[in-house]
Length: 308
Image (tube, rainbow, N blue to C red; front, side):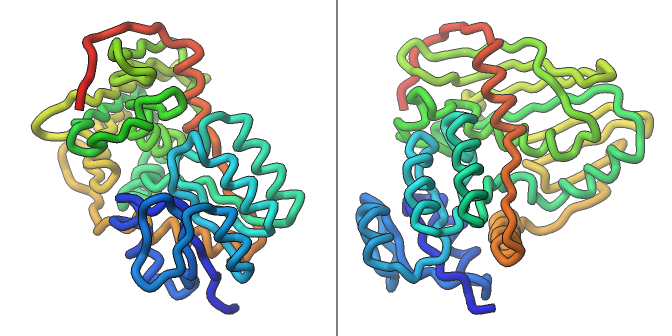
């Protein structure tokens, strides 16, 4: 099979840091165009809108969408309508309904739609899933706290309605949890902290349980300074499990069980090529459903204003 002619929409920091290096070393893809209001890629034909790009470069096979979620539906709809496979950065959309509509459109056209969750491809996630399947889980605790000024400086869109606020990184944790636990969890209560000058939360405290009443407590906070925390703990019949550093290290009872180099985005593009070749889609909305549930059930608490 010839390489997949790929285009990127939205050339920002995550594209330069992760997408471009992953595409460059994947022989299944040939990057032939970009569309972005500000960014370009050296040696690649550039446009300022997806419409102009699709009109001018009909040989595009697939489009990778890397703009904020509030704008993703329109771009994905245009790409699918033009007969292109679509890769969507996380979160796949601003609402569940629009992603469901895109999934239906992709199916009607025989195209592949990929709602990507990069943290699921962290090095130790599959080993953790296997471990939890082999033992009795008694409780789960997620601590996902980082400094927004370090990781998302001056990104106003992320504080707007639909930008998700602290759930933008928090959904990474939820994407792991929904993958590694053998049974589904359901939100029972939540408290969301909103800066008085923002439309999206800066912190969230979430409580879940599964059908067996096993509890899961999830803490998100964007005000963390010093050491950043991206850790998932589970108390089990085999002892305490820790999936640390965003999913890169698995330990049980203090003993390191698994660690490997990061391959998240290269793995995403391998998966995208796989589903395109197979004529399939991969759209799991479980992490986004949990975020929607938090906004629906959560108590709002207003806290001091946030300024970058």
